[in-house]
Length: 53
Image 1: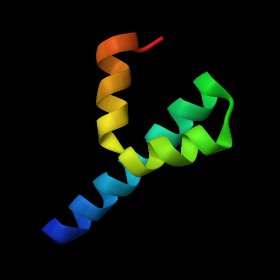
Image 2: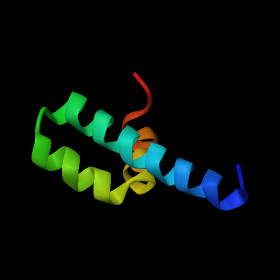
Image 3: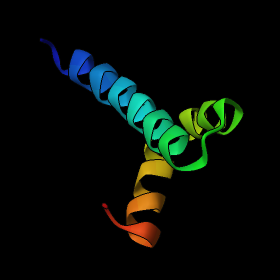
Image 4: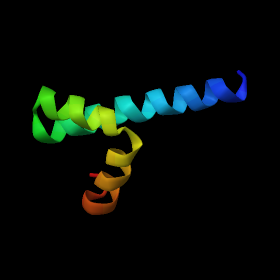
């Protein structure tokens, strides 16, 4: 993979991870979509304030 491919994969993974975390916790597709737009920002926020369960 080229460097830009790693970045795209990381961004995609961040979006997917944010959506899964959001849906599991809030049970809302709309919140999951919104948090997916935020991507890694939501993942980092969640870990800082709620930790990993």
